[in-house]
Image 1 (cartoon, rainbow, N blue to C red):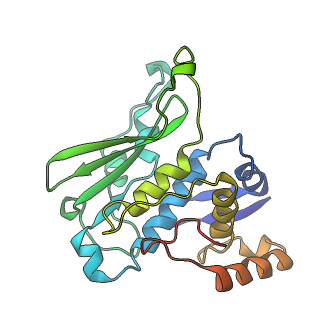
Image 2: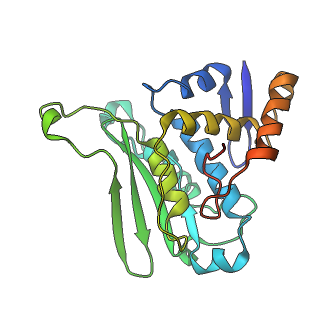
Length: 224
């Protein structure tokens, strides 16, 4: 059963099973959930004071570009995208009006060996910053495919990048996962909200109204 569906800017459907998997500490965020989280960040970015947005305008990329280029796939299992398809991954998000060339930063998430990483392209300084939260520890250097849950850290980095305050990461996985579900279920443009049981909707609404906390000007999965 689908509980969350968005058509803007493209179709994403999140089922009850997907929501259950989010609560599993041993599972990292799926690509479609990550894409939805990026859209939530971009949507909240558009609500920041205009002066702050212009000063450090950011373009949030989701995982569409990564999927399109077929990173890590053999050519026979991948079809190269068209120029038009790639260009769409750089379009401004709905409710925002800008050209990517006018953005100070382009935040491009990537996935490598099962872990999420982030490339920050700085148009002003003409350089790229690479953020990887999964360094290889001495005890597991012989395990090149050791996987860590890095999606939530990357999303926080995207939200807090150059927001005039030091980055303060929430590292409690249970809290982050629970609050991400709250974000999804309270999404205003969810066309499947009718499918969510009334008692759950009421509980989510109460949490959002009572316990909302703004972090760095952008709410990033933070409720008490």
